[in-house]
View 1: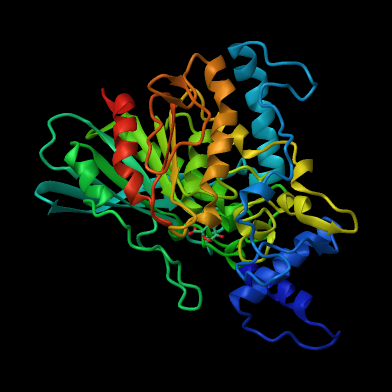
View 2: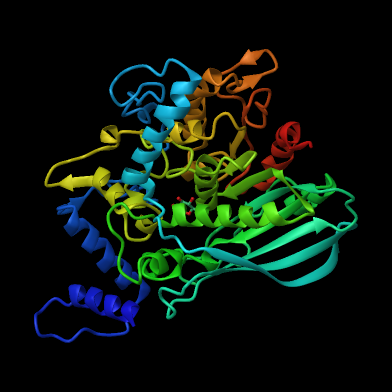
Length: 459
Ligand code: GCU
């Protein structure tokens, strides 16, 4: 009921002339546009800067020229406190700087998980036996029921699967993927995940081949990938079906929260070695995996594939997708409402340079735990995700790893901040990187990630 009221009030926002009755039902795009406008009004923004366009003839054509990428060379220093004093020790990093950074990311970029986020009760719905490339598997189909006693009209369930080698004699490490499997396909805007250029076993087979298991979290089962869904799903349930406040969680934070809830389940599963759970995701779910890793220190290692803008890439990088794209009606729901402020054009221009943080600091919040970052090439079709922009951010997270006694990006000779040749793995440190020669796919870097992760996933 409340949800309908909200849809109705959003519909009124869309109704141009007074007295004209709203035309229902609204399309998802219209609901998102009205909610987006509501946030702009709250922020007193009258115009946003235009997003980068895929059309090369547009005035805002996406930039793929490295010479023009460094528009905002000054980055915030993760090792300086808000009061300007240096972070002189690991203890100060842990007790003072980390909380400061979390507060800034919560308030300005990702949004806060509400204190009343519903409790989740996990249920094994069914268990099936199978096999994959000769490995016998046991799959548990899981549902995490969200407590909706405060709002029985809203039902939210987290869907997930846990696939383990059937013949394991002891608890096994698990790769938790924030998964595109079961991602709803919109025929108008199908997600293009090209088939990989290198022929490899599937990542699931590679993981099972190591004697590990994997878990698949289906993010859109509990939070839709659209602005129209923000009064429903877990965000809507916590908000009693009302629209978000400016610092309420966006879907990246909500999806990452779901990964943490699945981790809660894994901690109770006797067949899982919960101290060795990796979190992995690609593209929008690579962004999500970074958020999950930064905020939940139970994840032992992360693989962030082509996570791009809103992921491991610096906002202060004029190359590929831009922060304005994530402020537009099709993607703003990933972020907190306050995030829109940094794309303001009118009445007063605010730019990425005004952000109090940047994404190298979200990578730094994963420290001291190991993070592997990968992606494809411009020629292969992954320019939008700006893999070099994620590399630069990863280099800039290095000083925090060093402060905590860990190794920054390194090759066999020691620390290295030189962008490596395509296909060269930089995995001698606790931060790892590789650019594969293909496009927008996580598969070609999976073997390198597993080599990297193996150093940390042993019992
Ligand atoms: C779009 C979006 C990216 C995102 C990608 C994906 O291209 O602009 O930010 O990473 O979709 O999730 O595949």
